[in-house]
Length: 167
Image (cartoon, rainbow, N blue to C red; front, side):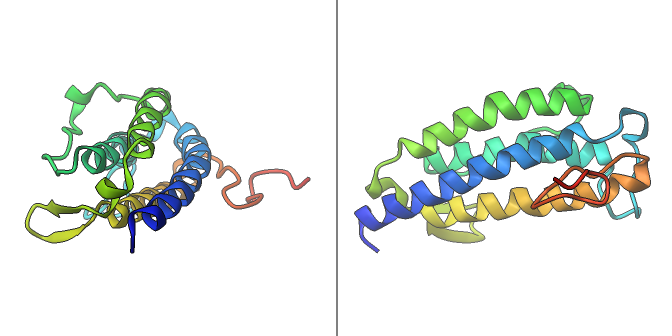
C-alpha cells in the first residue's frame, strides 16, 4: 500500500470511528449510577471498569498511534477520576476527539510506518487505527449487554433497541 492509499483508508476509518463515538457515548450515558459494581461473572470487568476502559483506552490507543509508539496503558483505578458514566462521557467527548484529530493529521508516511506494540505485534499505524475502532466497539458491546441486568435501558446502537421507540 502506498502513502496516498493509506491516507484515503485512514480518512475512512477516522470517519467511521467518529460515527461510532456518538453511539459509544449513548451507551456510556445509559449505565445506571447505582449499579456500577455489576459484573456478570468474576472474570468480567465491573460496569465501572468497562466504563473507564472505554473512556481511557480509546484515547490511549489513538494517542499511541499518533505518537508512533505504545506506552503503558492508562491507570483505570479511582485515581483516574472517572467515577461515573457522566464523567466517562465528558472525558470521552473531550479526549477521544482530540486524539482522533492527532491521527487525522498524520501523513501517509506515518500511517504506513510500523509500530511495535510491546513486542507482541508489529504493524503499520493504519492497522492499529482499524484495531482501535474494533476494540472500542467490542467493549461497548460488552457494556451494552450489562445494561438491562443493571436496571438500565439499552439505547439504539445500529437502529432501535427493545428500549427505544421505533420511528
